[in-house]
Amino acid sequence: MAKMKAAMAAVLVMEKEGVTQAFGVPGAAINPLYAALRERQSIAHILARHVEGASHMAEGYTRAKAGNIGVCIGTSGPAGTDMITGLYSAIADSIPILCITGQAPRARMYKEDFQAVDIESISKPVTKWSVTVREPGLVPRAFQQAFHLMRSGRPGPVLIDLPFDVQMAEIEFDIDTYEPLPVYKPAASRKQIEKALDMLMASSKPLIVAGGGIINADASELLVEFAELIGVPVIPTLMGWGAIPDDHALMAGMVGLQTSHRYGNATMLASDFVLGIGNRWANRHTGSPEVYCKGRTFVHVDIEPTQIGRVFMPDLGIVSDARAALELFVQAARERKAAGTLRDFSGWVSRCTERKKLMHRKTHFTEKPIKPLRVYEEMNQVFPRDTIYVSAIGLSQIAGAQFLHVYGPRQWINCGQAGPLGWTIPAALGVVVSDPTRTVVGLSGDYDFQFLIEELAVGAQFRLPYVHVLVNNSYLGLIRQSQRGFEMDFCVQLAFENQNIPESEGDLRSYGVDHQAVVQGLGCKSLRVTDPEKIRSALVEARAMALKYRVPVVVEVILEKVTNIAMGTEIDNINEFEDIDCRHPKGLKGLELAGLLE
Image (cartoon, rainbow, N blue to C red; front, side):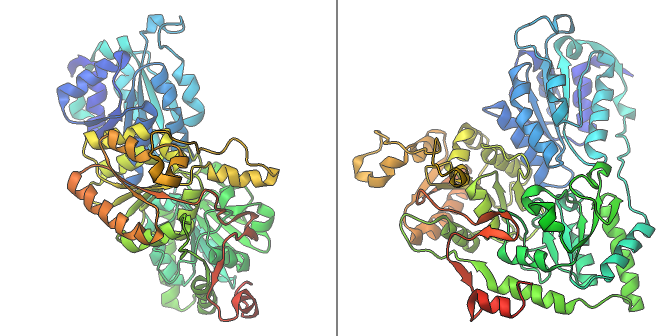
């Protein structure tokens, strides 16, 4: 046993739990913990410009690599409340991050002390566990429990609130004998797996829906192996995108109201059986259960017991970690293949492949101002196969999901459920910290970009290079599009005459914010594109600049102000606003006659 301050015990436990990186903003109430971090020099620290930014950096760091747990640190009061959005985003997508906040001394709690707030109560709805540690001797065990909870069952965030005097107190603690607690993961039984396979083999047009739980469980290779063994197409959810490469013969497209492919929706509507693994039937994926479920049998595998039946009741529910379930699925499928009892779904796969080949949306537009769809076409041409894309919400994210290509797990980093504006920049920085050797590309509309734009200075200060594609239409584009239902265009225009932009710049003056000036003022590099034929060269140049200068490089593409992106109210009722690139010689009618829409 050794005598030490409780704050030091917290740092030593984090070391033992594998933490090597933290993001945060120091302050008076959390300075004892920072003093311990400084003394140990074992956990690197990135200084954010906004505490919400620190929480999203921690998210990006966790999401980028299996086994990572991002840590974000802030002082008492507003630091904790600023991080609530990051905690919400993390719990919504099953992402483990550890939020540590300082707190007023115990004797001053609940007495309206400066920057003292009951962050434990505030954060409980958006964490797996939130605790204010009131006894110094509990500090190391609170951290031990935090890591156990974050990793066990459905992953998620934890907040630990440390009163100043608790951090400063001397305690006895033996770090040499410390061991992390065993992680609990529920596992499917062989009987359950055999039942699910029997149901799948009784169908004629089956699909596998691959959710983010597969990526969280680091089980993408098992998913692909299982799909190949049984010869069944895969529909990834937005959070599961990349679990199977986009160009794999069994990747059948994404399904949904917004972030979907035409061929993915058509294939789902033609199916008669769905095996969902590690997914939660999010409403942007399903639309109404009445349409999504009609004529289909469902098996649902998820790590969280209360997820089974939450949206709709499956015909068979299995509570299991995705990796544990897929290991058994692969084992059982191999045995059935050896015994010659697997059904041949090659005809169904062929029809799915034809849809994928023929049902596309047009991207090659040559007009000025630039149509956003052209931007994604050029991104696909320029960025390498292992690129990691980071995006938050808005028409930019929706169009990105419709048109970009993702070829591996953790190559699409997206806040799927919460969708907070401003998320992209700090999350991208967290991804770069996690894996500085990869090409990282952020994707934002102008409003998302402006929310936490100050975090670009973090990228400049800490030499975190990535390319940020900023599609600027000077509008709240997604909200403007949804306002069509109210026949209005109200309070969503971001344009104004910027008097600091020379009149010689023409239309650029009317787009409002001069992002180039702001980006450069924050120590980063920037390029601006107004001609669709110059997008590709700008992206190539940006990659080179990021590597040369080791800072974020922003490519601002000036778009037409109003573009409607394909979306709808049901998966069988999607509005296709732009020309459809239907490659069947007889057009959509030809697809229908060929039975590819059935």
